[in-house]
Image 1 (cartoon, rainbow, N blue to C red):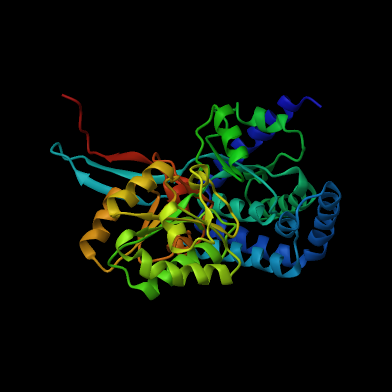
Image 2: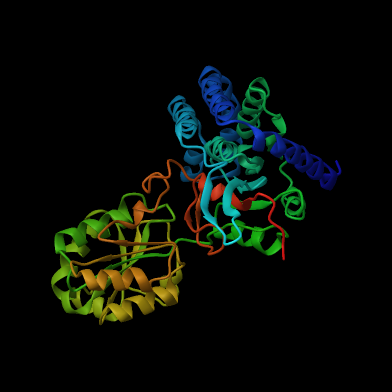
Length: 418
């Protein structure tokens, strides 16, 4: 097989699909998504059979239990996947929205219109539900999608895409709007990343290694976040009960996510009083604690933290603790070690909270709330395709609006340039 030609042909099919889906009405797109959801439920046994092949192969390859769990489709997960499509269908359609219309001195009206980006390439690992989730968001925003999932889920993804393409065609949409690179060769990703002018945007979803590889090799703009090194700063004006709950939820509720906290920073003024209780709470939950020298004086059983630990995204029940002399030192720490993903302050001091919000440069900055809340659904976007720590085009959770761009539109009545 000529992989370059294969990938190019697939991408050109997606480009044709992009023209079709960009013109589709909200009713057409919503109807297609609902029909796809119904098809998933009706053909769940086929999906589970295809998925079983992937799970068995992955188990033989020695994938971890956690990875096998992410890979596995069940009746419940298929029902949730279908429900997700229905929820996206119910979201407001951003395409065609007119923004900031204003009248110029010469009488013409100038504004912007929200339009699809075009062809979006999604490169991701393991979870087959991402195939349906990403496709539904791209389609609702009027984009074609070209999918390249992990080799460990190839049979599951092939079946999911096949169902969605069939339904799209039945609903009067060009099936090229949903395109899948169903070959496991890594060379396919490299060829995909060269197709500027056909693919308009690349979104990688996966570990830091995948995202860095994509970013370093792509000729196409990439929306990304490398890792989530998130912090909770417990200020001297914090409510202790609230701070304990926020620190605990930020780390323990689901430690394997990018918005889980990896370090808590505690104001020196309250550290001796606050830390013993939260340390016990973390220990009781099985969290491995690594602390600075000041923390070890309060509890010598805490493991000593290294400088490298502060850069680490553990994605596990491991947490760093550092005592800082004040909020300035906390913000300096976040600037030095953070990944511009999610950071929160716990405080009852309004002025200090506002200063933290202004000066911490992350995709989401929270006051008196868990880092785990940096999420498209929690923020009212309905759904998200990922969280971006970039500063151009989109930042933070990416919902439907972030899968569009704008173009200038002008309404005149004969105006000429003088």
